[in-house]
Structures are given as C-alpha cells and as structure tokens.
Length: 184
Image (cartoon, rainbow, N blue to C red; front, side, top):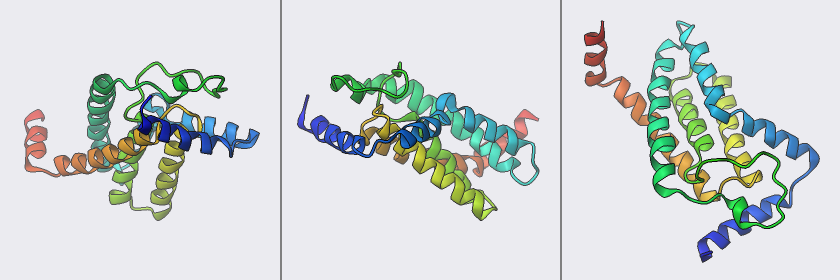
C-alpha cells in the first residue's frame, strides 16, 4: 500500500467516526438511489413525458450513454482499482461488496452529470437545489460506506460535470442537429 492510499484510507477512517444507526440507514438509502442508475433512468422517463423538460431529457440520454461508455466500460476496466474496504481488516460493510473496480465512482459521476444538466437547464430553482444536494449526498455516501476512495469520488464528480457539459454542447451542436434530421 502506497502513502497516497494510506492518506485516503485515513480520510475514510475519519468519516467512520461519525457513524450512527441513523446515518448508517440514511447513507445506505441515499447510495441505493444511484444503484444501476435507476434513479437517473426514471428521471429521463419522467422528463421525456413533459413538454417543458423533453429537451433536457434528450441531453440526459446522451449523457447517460457517455457515462456508461467512459466510466463503466472504459475507465473502471482500464484503471481496475481495488475498493478501499479490501484494505481494511474487520470493517463492517453496510452494503454488499461491489463487483467492479473503484475508480472512478460511477454513482458520483452520474449524479454530477445529471446535476450539471439540471443546474444549467432546469427551470425550477427547487429542482436545481434538490438535485445538487442529492448529488452531494450520493457522492458522500460512497465515502461513508467505505466503497470508494476520496479520489474516486472526486474524479467521478469532475468527469460527471465534464460529461454533462459536453453532452449539452453536443446536443446544441450543428452535428447533432444534422444527425437528428437524417434520422427522420
């Protein structure tokens, strides 16, 4: 184990000191919202069914595919980082062990991607605030649950913001408009 990994584990151990039965249940519930990206898929479906948010939902589909390719199929397999709980003996995990690699955090990436799109395009202030708070909580829950290193979560957030911005840029580009017109 290198010194950077030790440093990150010390951060996770410090977070473990705030554990309580309430926070345990809360963080498991918050983290589960990101499992399988089901929350984000449901959000796309709901937004597609509204005139006001249909364009934003289409951007979310592009971003979802971008996340899937870049994070889940790409970086996780290339980096193949061991999960932090594998380094700690006797740690009581609150969720089942995760089957894929640790870097970057997919939960954090998807949450940051969707929060970015909603922050830029959402018409409702309460929706923007709610999504931002939810993204922060989901990201923090991954640290609390000891399934990601801080650098995994930070990288996931940064990549998620970039994927969100690039998805919006792509959607509004002339290239995407040409593709849509050719498909009709």
